[in-house]
Length: 142
Image 1 (cartoon, rainbow, N blue to C red):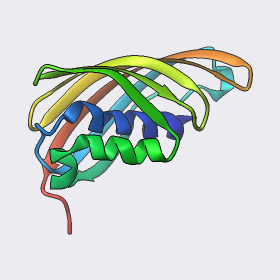
Image 2 (cartoon, rainbow, N blue to C red; image 1 turned 120 degrees about the vertical axis):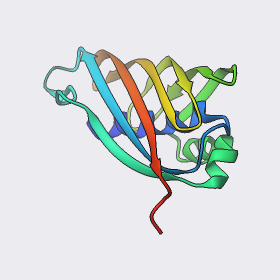
Image 3 (tube, rainbow, N blue to C red; image 1 turned 90 degrees about the vertical axis):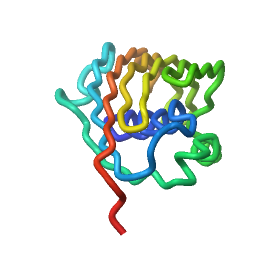
């Protein structure tokens, strides 16, 4: 469950970037609050991961979204980008069906926002609210 949520949230990082972010090594910190998952709820505490965002991905985040969608994971809709804030709806089919919406604010070197999801996993209806912070650390390691 924890890995599945992080994969979705990392994909969202590409969605709101809209080409206005700096390529390089980024650190994503995600705090998830869940209702209705019982023992399957994410462990308390942040999920932290680092990822290299290439110049191609920073310039064309739609390509990254298409690649994620090709794996059957998530489809983004109702995307609205003001240049500093990105709003969207999302529906995912794997590893379990979820749908929701998010709002992300971004600059060239920082991102921050929230993602609300609802779904059904093995008959358990659940809701999650995730707060995402990301920052550029510097150039990618070779």
